[in-house]
Length: 509
Image (cartoon, rainbow, N blue to C red; front, side, top):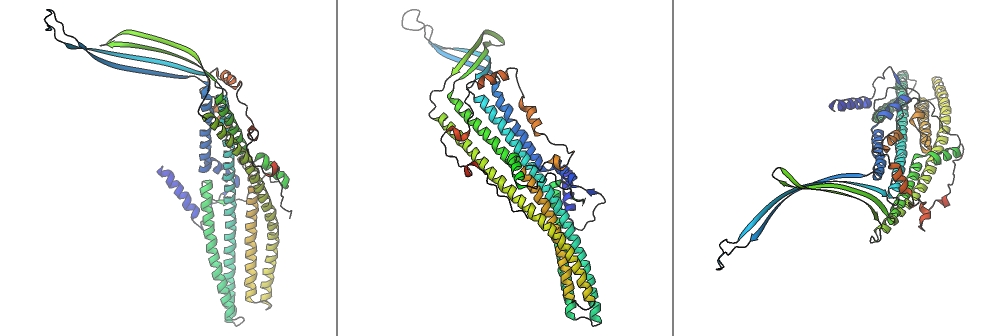
């Protein structure tokens, strides 16, 4: 544990140290995603939570199987009773005086009992349905967490790239301004410019040094964030590849989001689980049938000898019909109904959330693509302008301030371009995440994909017995049907625009 803490501390130290020379090897986005996919604590913790949730199914199916119990008892009995005196002569005087008689006895016993549910009115079957739906919902929740982690990896990756580029721009600007100050001092000494021009160069140089310090600090922050998410400090990051599957059409993106968004799919599975629990609550009104048998033996103990052993065997079938529960069953049914109604409303909320997420992300993609195109043109124009102002200054057509302003505009344009590249990539990742298409296997082909369904299938039939399917089939006979929540009773259900999704695509730019 101590060694691991030392290792993590070393990673953090490397991550926050600015100005370190980059290693000779390069790191790709696919490598960063693969490492985070294997080691990110948030993702690993959610997988463990899902494996815990998988156990709900074998727990629900355990009701199909018999229960076996053994009980043992031992007792000690001491009895003291009065013994009357005896008058042999009839003279009223007992020749044998009254006394007390004490008897002692020890006994031991053991019983083994078996109970098997034959029919529960659907309680077991609907409980299994609810557990399986909850597991599928949890699986979608795991996929949502996976997308959040991968989106964070992508953002951290391009943040480091952006800040490295900004730091390079700041360093280049500082070198240019130092040369400009040296040139201004030389021209001041020969009387070509005034002291004001020199002071302007000094002021811009001081501002550039402050900007450089800020860029170094921001890069340290981005490196630390990268190390926390990915699990190692960033090296020489390569240019990320184009994200696969980014749609060019808003309607296509929204249709995919409404069909594949993990939060929406989890809400739909939650509704299935809630409706199954509502049917399970209604099954309490139905009779239940069970089979029970027991075998026991009891004996008295005298010293170390066993005597008077009694053997008992009992077997029977029981039928239980609920007649009156003081309103408990009806209250549970009403509670389960409202929980199903809430689950249905949650689906509408998730649909709105998908609409908002896809619309916002698509608008950001469109806007940032336009900003990137403008940024490329702006850098080209600012570079030509800066070079022209410098040449014009040499022939006396421009002042020192004009040159300084030209350099400032060029550096700002280069920084805006770096920011626009980062923003477009993050917006595309956000769009894929809103659609439910930001997966590890798509971003890093060849990655060892974690299969949550495999563990659920592995534990589903833990402890199974040959007659499980027969008992389950019998329990589904006459079981309360699973009814859609808003059709069960006349319960008020808020719907979103009569269940319709209003598409508000951002204007094309």
